[in-house]
Image (cartoon, rainbow, N blue to C red):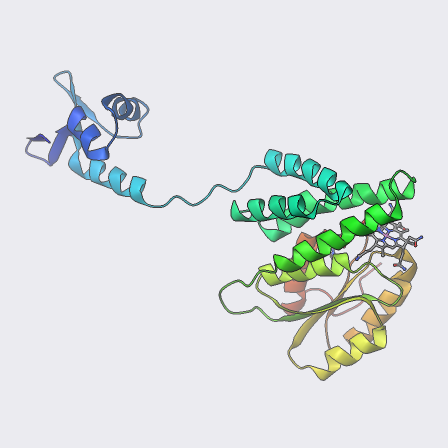
Length: 273
Ligand code: B12
């Protein structure tokens, strides 16, 4: 390796810089041309500061953070997820979910962008009779198991404790599972009570545990909205901020509102109509 010393700092000729970086001369030349590798052209020859070469070498050796999948990839995987859920192919469902998580997709994104759209489509298809109840039940059961297995356990201190349930008459447990995993991923401790929970029971559960910061009622069956809201009023009165979900509400809304409830902004009083 040949250093060319001028009075400022040591510099390398382009071939020496390429050797030090372990790349072909042409690659180093391209980096110089596109500005990635700063160089000075002196008497028709490029000279590169030894410090810049050392920095570039160190940065190339540092492990790169994995690039999270693009929205287009999530969309394609959601279409694939739809097919394998309809086919009841649990192995394929697990494979899609696991590889996306390994590639850096959050569980929240996985649920919102990859799993929820096919479940909604399956709901539509069930409603218009093009998908049988068994196919829908099988898909839901697969998602419930897969989400259970992905349960995150993030490092760091928990932000607080949240209870998640759906009210009596609402048999949709999946949205409560989705809420529970998203909250766990966001570092909340979660008591997941699941579907069909009596309001009285939820009230007693919150009242008996000082550590409960927020109660969350996932709501999928619109027929029980009034029951869910009545339970929420009573739980709030007993001192626990309470949120009620509903059609069109997202997990991102949920996380924001749970934080808002702990900060005293949401879920303490009745929403203004
Ligand atoms: C799976 C399913 C079932 C399964 C549930 C299995 C299970 N283990 O959960 C079973 C078979 C039990 C079922 C039963 C029924 N179902 Co159903 N079901 C579905 C389906 C296909 C998916 C439900 C789901 O998981 N949704 C979750 C995601 C995909 O949707 P989401 O609503 O956006 O959920 C988000 C929010 O809830 C949010 N979230 C969760 N918690 C919280 C909390 C807060 C505070 C916030 C902000 C957000 C939040 O997280 C979720 C993800 O983003 C839906 C289709 C659909 N569009 O959802 C129909 C659907 C909900 N069901 C429907 C119906 C009609 C029924 C039945 C009445 C059918 C019948 N005749 O028996 C019964 C009702 C039973 C009952 N008493 O509750 C209708 C409801 C229509 C309506 N609006 O009235 C739907 C929309 C299907 C349709 N297109 O017609 N169902």
